[in-house]
Structures are given as C-alpha cells and as structure tokens.
Image 1 (cartoon, rainbow, N blue to C red):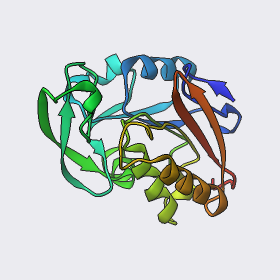
Image 2: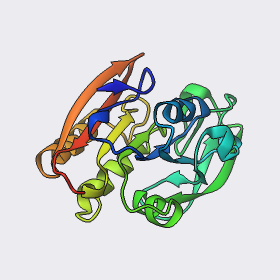
Image 3: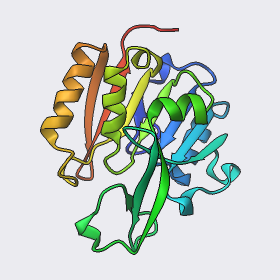
Image 4: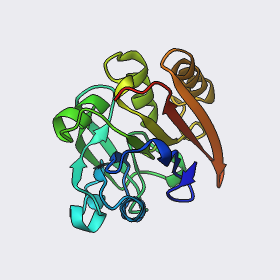
Length: 205
C-alpha cells in the first residue's frame, strides 16, 4: 500500500499507467497530490459545495462535477456552516446552525460515473463526503453490473457524526462487500477518523 496523502492509501501495483480516479468530496490539496503521483491519470472530482468547485486546472482535475453523492437522482438540500469547507447533506450540531442551505443536484455513483463523468470503470474511488460514502457502498453491493467496475475504494467513515450512519450499519455493508462482492478490506485510523480501503479481488479487465 502507498499513501497518496496521510489519509488516502491504495495498492498502486494493480493500477494502469493512466488510472481513472474519481474523488468525491474533492479538495484541491488532495487533487494536487493525486496529480503529482499520477501525472497522466484521468481525475474526476465530485463536490457538492459550489464554493469548492473551482476551475479544473486549479483543482488538478480533468473534470469537476458540481453534485452530491446520493441514493437516488434528484435535488437535495446541502447544509453549509461557518467553516467554508463544512457542508453536509445532514445537519451537524457540532457546527451549530447552518448559515446557508442550497438545493444541489443529487446523483447516484452510477450516474456520476456514466452520465456526468463519461466513464464506465474506475480504477480508484476516493471518498470523504461527510457521511454519503455509505450510499456508494450500498449501490456497489446491490448492483451486479457495477461492483466489478470499481477496482479500488478508499473512504473516510463518519459513523460517530450521523445517527443514520452507525458503526453497525457500516460493518454490515463491509462484510457483505467482502463475502459476496469479492473485495479485500483494510482499515486504518488517522486523527480519530477511520479510513477503509476495499480492493476488488477478481480481475475484471
């Protein structure tokens, strides 16, 4: 495993020379680190907060999609807090009352890949999207046509922040991904937050 940042890690030995990487909850610093490590990668950034959807050249990305990862396609409310980068699909009591709410486009992972990103497969999916990561796990687990097209996943978990996102629920979906969908799972802890890496065992290329 190599660490792209102190938090995100992956097995680069199985990646092609020009990997297709989607970063949901993208921030410029992480995108720059990805671009530095894989200069020829196709990088797709997905960000729900319009204030963070800067020019792709600034992000070091090929494509920047202004949308939120959700369970189904359609508009959804995004809560913004005093901290510029603090936004979520759920209320965050820790940050007090939201200072703004915005209606943003909600998209499933499949829609983000195929319709918005123009790709059928992902070599690496990175997610730090304030609790929405679980939506992607659930979608990959139940869609037989999707799970074999996402080769590696590295995601932050937010079980302690959202009532709907419990440790038990996360563990249940991870066990399913491991037992039924053919993913090996590695877990790390950084600054009190758990990061999970999933790697598809069967070569689907």
